[in-house]
Image 1 (spheres, helix red, strand yellow):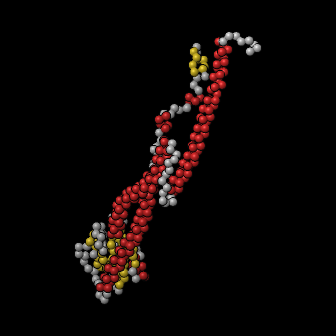
Image 2: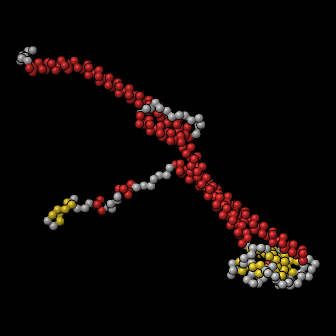
Image 3: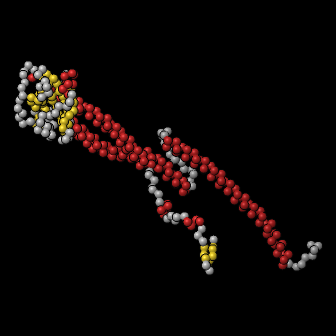
Length: 310
């Protein structure tokens, strides 16, 4: 629409001009579709990854229980052996000779306590003192003839798994750092992660190959369809597979469609041929009368005048 501006006319901006301009290249830019083969391969790899994750989680949980149980069994056996050796003897306080540092050692240590819970002998120390006994451990050991507990030095971050067993003159306590089962489990975890990588790659490759083999008949169908569309040879047919899978059903349906198209194309061709013959016959039949009419018309134009009686 044109409007008056001062002494000149200018074209007013229409309402559509207020819309933001979008680059047609940007508007048409779309991500490339992912092929069906790649999607099938990724799906197969995802299924294998989920299976490995579930299997690894179950295996890790079972090994965690097994490692903890093995540590408890070792502590119990060591305490029972020491208590059996101390039976019938009056054990007194013994000096500590080169005790192990539990801050770095992962060996099983032994500690002998009197009936009041005071240490008489120990093979390891934590921060320069005998390992602390968790509260209530000795009472539970007396009540249940042996008990487990976890304690240590929270400042140093050292955790100990302990087992207390009462005997006639006091208690026998065995313990070990919890880093032992944690170290074993970390090794198992590393093994699971490292072994999962080649397994996933192998699953992805296998899924890619299987998907390619499964989709090969579809590529043959697509190629044949393009060739038929280019040559218009509706007499061609797809090879019927021996199996009765989805691809074979698709090929059979495609062949039935080609038969229908061939029949329709044949009927159209026959109708066009009949039309051409009719036009040719009509033109031949009309040629002689038209020539006669044309000759008589020329005679009337260029010949002598003919009376009205004629």
